[in-house]
Length: 406
Image (cartoon, rainbow, N blue to C red; front, side, top):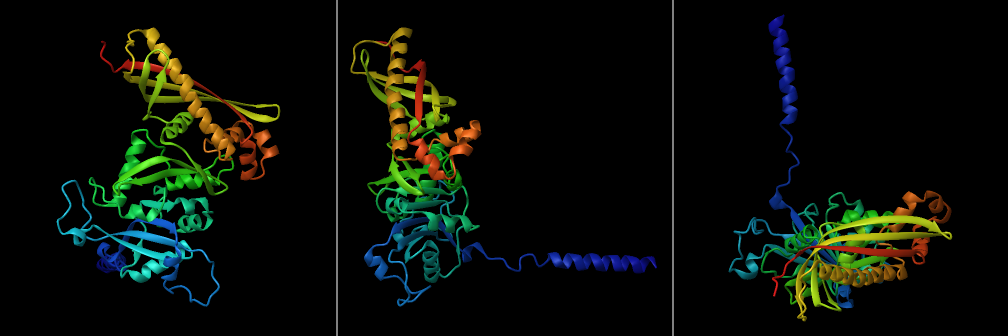
């Protein structure tokens, strides 16, 4: 009986193991996938609309009059450089690591179906890292665009969504000397801007989170192209009611991050003092203390911004900065002038009904009774935000003087 039992046990074990041998029956090789690295979305021109292919509809169907133009950057297998040693080839366009394809559609889903009709391999968005939309698209409602991206399980929440000055498709054809793949260059630029304190960590998932909150408005990086190679982070593009309403200047990114208390401090400020001429102060660290209350039936917030920095440069003055008293005067000048920058940014967002600072979330957390009484939807807080009082105080401490005494 024992040999029979051993035989039966071995047969059962083999039967179970055979089920594991079919684990790759539905495999798709990476060379047989069209990996989309980057997308750009623009409003379609009349000429582009005239060339739309009839993939999902016919001409006689009643469809919306507007359309979008989508440009996809697809990786070419074997040509994407894997490290710094993979330099550019002399074969020109034949050795390009990406294939750029432009299609037109009435929605993003429609355009992606048109894209699939023009490429042999099935498209995959798992490696999509950068989406650039034009300012025209951002100033329209983004409901359809966000709906498609949020429902697509291949879209990563750590994808960057950027708003471009002018046509977004230009960013799919940039030729940066430091990187052969334009999308990877844009991705590297944004990640390094975050690491150096030049920009908040504002991924696509963070944008959706802010857009969903009643007490906070969303914002995105606002970028511009210079000389077909240089990409400039020109500011923040901020939203109200799911539409882009305005932009900031580059220095105001630092002001926004200071209000949020984001470290490290990556911006330098050039300003003129009364006694010591022009100076440049580099901010190294930032810390923010926030207090809130309800005064006369309205929210009141106070931000105390603490900075640590260095005096990087001092010019156009023969008076040396050679004492603690001189440093203190420069600190006071910094506090006064940069306070104007911060207050101006807050005032402009209030005028635009866009609470990118998340002040509403502070009121909701700290004063739930007021929130439940006055807020029924996101628009209620955007209207209240435009009329609240916000005070700002700055405290700069200069740790080092990067100058040689004269």
